[in-house]
Length: 314
Ligand code: AMP
Image (tube, rainbow, N blue to C red; front, side, top):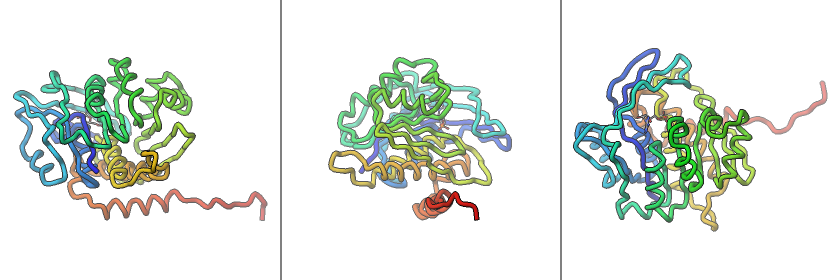
């Protein structure tokens, strides 16, 4: 089953305490597309400028990625520059140049409209709404966002949140959006807006899943000895999550079973962990389903504990 994504395709310049890389393939939709195409066909909606290197398009053409919805326009590709702290869960955005995104309006090709899974990757909420209006029959809609939109376009973001099924947010973004110190209280407020699930991204500490039906699940993270570049981990998470679900049959009510949603979150964590092992989408280029399966087994082992115990002293 194909997955539709709209979001940024960018050229990123990233500096960590240990290395720097210039004008590498980045953008939320790029990470998602590369990750999810490990599982199923991805239908990409985005825009790049005439300066966008052909080799990136050729790379996607060699994977199950449909580029019919990728507009190529005279002008400059979106550019983003960031610097990571020693704690690589924290970073500063140094520069954002919208380039051709300034006048962009997503147009969903007819052949994409039957996509049952939709990921609204990081992009202006108005554009995410334009996509929702063109894709009426999605089975599951997943939304990602960032601090910038919480601060600058909150009312528009609110309208999008009310229309989707699953929201991905970092702990910090939940506090910013809900103005609550407690993540649990903040998530409750978000679920009351009509969401089925909220996934709380915790960077190198994993992810929490909260459901409107009372579901709570803490998904472990894979312990990486070395993080090269965490950029795009959230988008790759979404790629693993929706990628996994794209190969799962929904229940009779057209919803996914909670256990499948949990497995999807674990796949998200796994793909997110792989992305951190190299700059850009480097690690995803060679990633195989066997690599994913091995890490899945490790996570089961690392997070399983015996439910039986005794309070009696020996
Ligand atoms: P993440 O690390 O998951 O937050 O995703 C980082 C990616 O988001 C980078 O590759 C950037 O190119 C992209 N990005 C950064 N700022 C924006 C923005 N304002 N709009 C859309 N994409 C952005």
